[in-house]
Image (cartoon, rainbow, N blue to C red; front, side, top):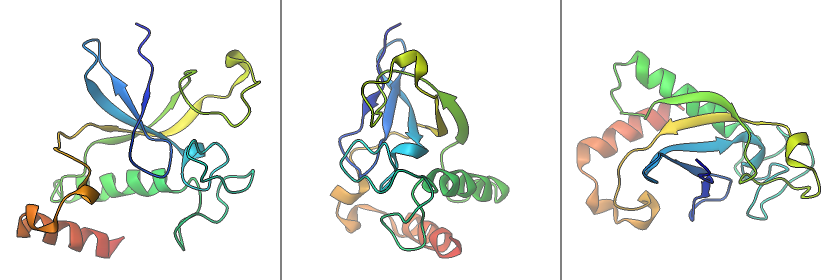
Amino acid sequence: MGLKPRLAIDGTGGTYFLLDPFKLRTAVFKPHDEEPMAPNNPRDNVGGPELFAAGMRPGVLAGEGAIRERAAYLIDESDNHFVGVPMTLFVEMRHDGFHYADPTTLDADRPPKTRIIARIVDSDDCAANLSPSTFDTLSVQKIAAFVFVD
């Protein structure tokens, strides 16, 4: 179908929207080698040449974010989706629309990207761009309780 993954405008890592045949966003793919401080980060937040080195946040290694997001989904799933973490799965994908630090590598020789894909959740904007007053109290309390466990 020739639909190229679209790099999200926001964020510090490689987060791509995947489109359906109607060109509507249907999923989010976040390759672990494009996370903040990972070797193939498309936003100049590149650390060393290896994954699982020091990341942008203390205690979170580069490439580990996807593992944490999958774990969050599994924890929420075991609690009957109390918080509502979108379905999050590990997948492997290859597309020339993803970022590779070495642009001279031929597409066929590039390793597939691995990590998570998540279901799209409709929203008006990125949460960071909204006033805290736009969130209802129960939703904030659910997230706070969940993040405390993290």
